[in-house]
Image 1: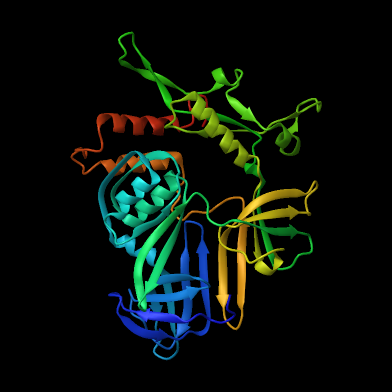
Image 2 (image 1 turned 90 degrees about the vertical axis):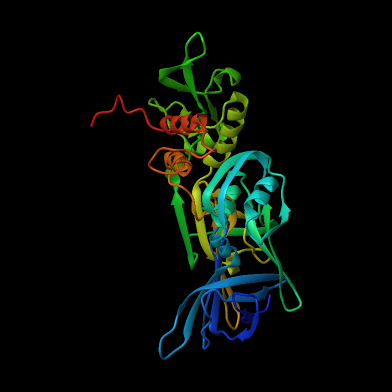
Length: 406
């Protein structure tokens, strides 16, 4: 990687070449998984909102769109530009019903209203969601969330201009390069964030609510028991990690045995006990890890250059017993000046830029998207079954309040 500020090619919003734009001082590039991808710098020029900035990052072309400038009467112009994926904010998806679709089929449907294509799409199984009256970028992020993929923009250049724009949807960006990070008590320029209360060594898994029906199969209002998997799991409606219990559990009342720290995870769309058991085991594999992140300079890593998404072996010697974790580079900030200074966030929790705050909020949002107006009319996508399922899922996610005192 070059140790200087990269050359930036300047185009207007119509992709016509204006020239080169000279950076004064440093340029900062910030990127995170399925989230922020921005550049910031100062210049003597004043690019217009919507102008396009093309630059080469090692062997990869990147394109950013100017979204904000600060132009004092006397002084340098400060430029803030976002990945050209942001142009999808101006592409509108009227209604896209994705039922039992592959990730490629879902991408094809959402990108149809844009000028972006599919460069690569991993096989991520089948899933479904509704994209209704949303911009295409929201739809793209929603697909990445539902099919559990990670998005990368791909810019192809030919003849001195952008020839095509596409996206990759990978199950996982980055790779294992043997990177290792050792955290010690006396390290400088390192910030550790720990949320130990989120560690569970056993999880209950709950699926869709099971309605009561009468002898004719008609729905009967009343208490709705959630799907469990005890009948195929030795009578236990939970899964447990015995090894993790020895580290993250607690003593029983008589201090004769260690007991697990229990949590629960809902899968309100799951109607199959075997699938529910599989999903809960996968959730437990993440729940037994301490939620921790380390913000460090790349120089603190033992190994090759660090790219976004790369896997890092973390040894935290400040804990007893020491933590040995596998984490990923979830955020990278590079400052291009006379040299390139890179700072990364290594985390076991991966940030996303559009996550909902709760399962109930997601269910309410889904129902709201289906309603066209206050007259109560629904779109063709919102049948009675869809509305009932959405409301049911929201109710299932509520805590039982009957026994609580206020």
